[in-house]
Length: 218
Image (tube, rainbow, N blue to C red; front, top):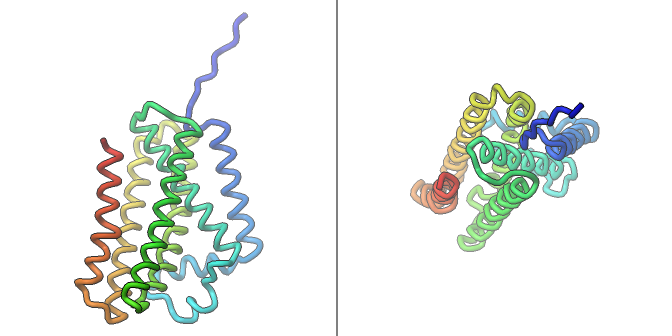
């Protein structure tokens, strides 16, 4: 008697489960090693400006728990992008497509970090750039955490994908808009002319996002 063929679902493959387990390990490590990072994360989400004490003491770019949270967030963003691509009918799927998504997410983050440093060197002034850099990293972590239940349900609840994928895209859009809003507040609060803030947002944030969306939809 012939066996029943297993339906192959690229969104719930074994390698996807392995990646999600890795994310849970990173989150569990943070919860054990530095539970105060969660208070920092959610506190920074609802505080429009990061205080000097937070920047001086709580946000350390060399902190392994913070690096772990950033890595987990980038992996979740890449996995969600992979899910959106597959649900949208992209002909290719599997680890190679996820790898390209992850590479794209890393390149975007590194490009933002480099651009912020270049702007600081050109203007020879901080102008709130360091605060915005840390704000961007913290919001990226929060976005990854918020997408975690969406990514899990998309992977293992196929019947809900038609609702969850748009919901996840709305979450991404809202967090990006919130980040831009925080950028305006930080720049104005540091005495940067509003036109310079909008010039930065248009050239370094809005235009690249628009080009990425156009490229993805075509």
